Image (tube, rainbow, N blue to C red; front, top):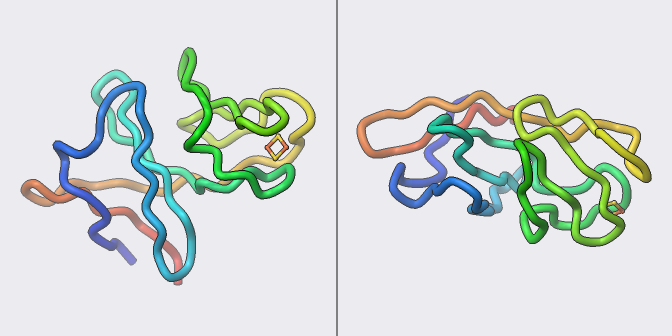
Amino acid sequence: MFKKLAKIDEIQEGKVLSVETRYVRVGLTKLNGEILAFEDVCSHDGEIISEGEIENGCIVCPRHLAKFDLKTGKALCMPATEPIATFEVRTNGEDVEVNIEE
Ligand code: FES
């Protein structure tokens, strides 16, 4: 189900807006103009990933430096081996809506 999580102008290239919902913490960012949404919890040991750096389309977990592809959620290096979830995004006027399973 799509839920409104932010306004379009709150989401910026190179930064992550972290939004906690009842079911999941979602990180929102913009990559080459496209808004992306991912689960903002590291698959290695639960760190909040949005506090890490974004580099070349990836985000680096600030705790043990695992790297995840922002588009696919794929874990790109150790110590993470499992992906993080990514979510479908749509815009509705000025709103950003994310498809979160409930
Ligand atoms: S908690 Fe993210 S790499 Fe360990």
